[in-house]
Length: 476
Image (cartoon, rainbow, N blue to C red; front, side):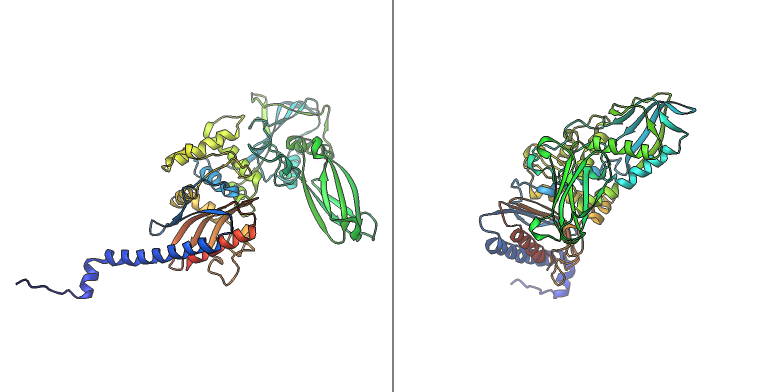
């Protein structure tokens, strides 16, 4: 007759703790899966589709997947792939740099030689930065440039838009004309203030430049004048700006300007003249070939964190394309960079993470292109990689929008919901596409990487409500 000994529960726990832990974890995972399945069944906008991937970074295990391998258009969540790859590069901390050089000699108040403005694709270079650069030049002992003034835009090719960008998105400011020499993001900002009823409004333009012309047909405090609007003759690639409509309070409008490098150089020449520096010829474009007569006169640097902050918090397309171009330059060590050089670096990281880059289509760095196709599981793979690299994660995490607090999530996930302050994620949206990917913190303290890619949903409001509900359920 066999005898059996019953062990006390405390002994079982001490001998087999992982079994009970696994059972508890499995039960919680099943509950979460059931809740998310229910959300998909009843809350997913009608006629649309979704892919979801959720990974527990603390426990190092998947929590939930739904069509996670399916290809979707990422919209601005594409910026995560670009930024993470760029931040992982050994030269990631190098600033974005704009320089002024001369070749020749300075004699008797005259620069007998040529001046070069060398573009480094700084997307944050603004009016103040230009004044700083010109002021540094003006401290040199000359007031006449006898040679030529060149803009050096050799950092990238001449394609001023990304592959698949929509022609009728111009002249909106979110679609700038790309160039290594960018001023104010290639955008003119017009601020209108009301005057006497029926009179034209008072306009203030930034940056001030002779590059564009302006027509003011606004009417102050006159509703019949229609909606306030700033536009230009974009169909003919012109830069004649028209400001129209009713101005019953302070109004601000933006418009992109054709040919960013010309906008930069013409304004640079204006500022030189304002400082008393006269040029005997107009500007043109040429690449600086350094030699023994070359001297750097001025430099303006923008920290990479400032560029990343704008990419993530404000979903800035220009900043993402600048980051892609710089990534291509760093990866190849060359100039005349194309978008493909940066995208090739992203594909190398995709392969390094164990995925086949041929399964995806990468067209630009910012997500404006409808040609981009990635998957939720790939987005999460990049987020996991970033989390594993402290140097990358610190820069990325501090830049991400926070639920209910700031960036593009400022007006979502409001106070009182589980997601409030607990979601740090990148949004992505254009017509019929709405995505959210990033990190969140569960109530048990675990850090989670997730990606939610809603497709074919015309109501952005419904898609955002669904995504917020998914985040709430994961956090609980």
